[in-house]
Image 1 (tube, one colour):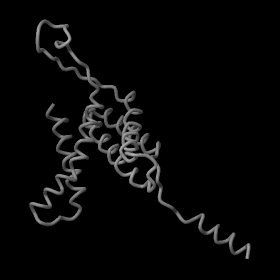
Image 2: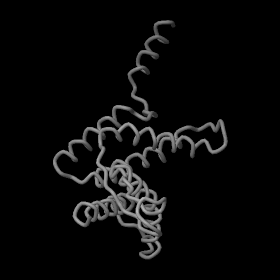
Image 3: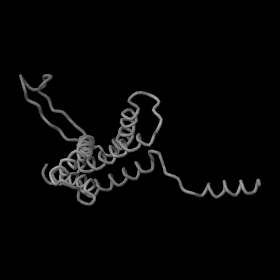
Image 4: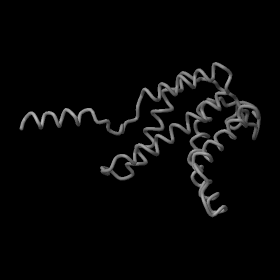
Length: 173
């Protein structure tokens, strides 16, 4: 009897389960690809757009795998933590800045009239997250207009929007 139970546990140990973790290795791999893309000339905005979309997709997916709710707004808190822990480790590796000038009142150097430096990767990651967040709503609107879905509509719209925004930032700015 003991041998049967041990054999059953031995067999069950080799049945693969579903991974329910935010893999640091995946983030490092995405970061390595982002650095490689920036090295070959892809705009840091574009790299940020795709990494931001990746981070938000993880941030929206992983909290749904936690069935028990321990605190209020648990899904939102986990999503924010996952997004931040995906983006922030890549910031030191992708430090490309751009400047913009603000001239509102008075002379240069006052509070309102300054040159501000912003991280292009960080701006791109916010844009990518926004596109990823808006894509299901766009897909729903397309479904309303057509009265049906086309195959892989959600993925096609998401990737299409990311591609259009990326092409704009790569060649338009």
